[in-house]
Image 1 (cartoon, rainbow, N blue to C red):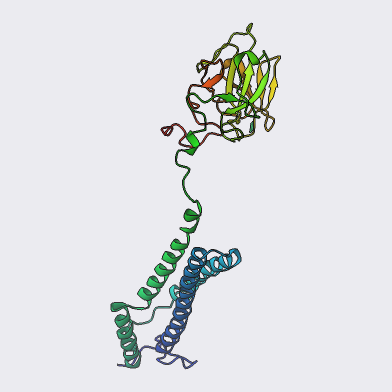
Image 2 (spheres, protein in one colour; image 1 turned 60 degrees about the horizontal axis):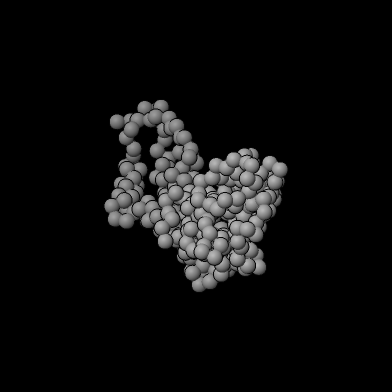
Amino acid sequence: MAEPDRFPPATPAGGQTKADRWRRQREREDRAARWAAVCFLVAIVAALSLFAVYVSGGQVQLEGLALFVAFAGVGLGIAIWVRVIVGHEEVIEERYPMRSDDAEREAFEELYEATLGEAGVGGRRRFLVRLLTGAGASLGLALLIPIRSLGPGPENDLFRTEWDAGARVVDAEGEPLRAEDISPDQVVTVFPEGATGSADSQAILVGLRTDVETDLRQPTVDGIVVYSKICTHAGCPVGLYRAAVGELLCPCHQSTFGVYNGAVVLSGPAGRPLPQLPIALDDDGYLVALGDFVEPVGPSFWNMTRGGGS
Ligand code: FES
């Protein structure tokens, strides 16, 4: 039966049939798939190289280059895949009668068989997905590097200082101090005996006036109080004492702490009082600690209420 005039010619004027177009499209996709695969392979090699360079001692420039190549490989591979293989054009084709001529049907069957074969056994798509997964896993391995760089945990160090029960209170020269050596409004930087200069154990001893009421949180000796010298904001040494108002001042960001009120924060960015050292007198009249600070010294950290045991 003759085809109606409105049907398109079996072979268009340009000499290009649907089968030709399919074939060319197919070749284009194959080429793109090969390039995408190369990109993913390069990304895998680069990510593994990054890991190897880091583990064998590290070299910042090489690590940076490897990271760049790994990310570029993954990005480029995905871009090729999305733009060429998946395609991004919206195509509208005029609808002709559905039946193709015999040559087109034959060509289509050939292509269909080939495509079906690929889809069934490790096809192009599956191959690319595997490579992309491999590149992602390799990059994930490289992302473990920062975790390894964190080094060992601080364990209990953040909760302990050198202060211990019975440790004498000494000045910066290591001289033990008696209560009678301290006069009102006097300020002395002190350490536990045997640990002079210890950064986290440094404390500030203040002579108290007897005519001012106190509200302290730890046992102490009459007329004397000892606080950690490390600011609870960012760790600067709290070294300035305004005797007239009984305030310790941190020079870094101007936090002030009330000496007569358990070093509560009176102003500034510090978030908690300076820890107070519990002290007493030993049999010879020397100032001694009754134990360590009951809370961590210095800036706060996320789990500071959890630890403390030795
Ligand atoms: S470190 Fe003391 S106020 Fe900031």
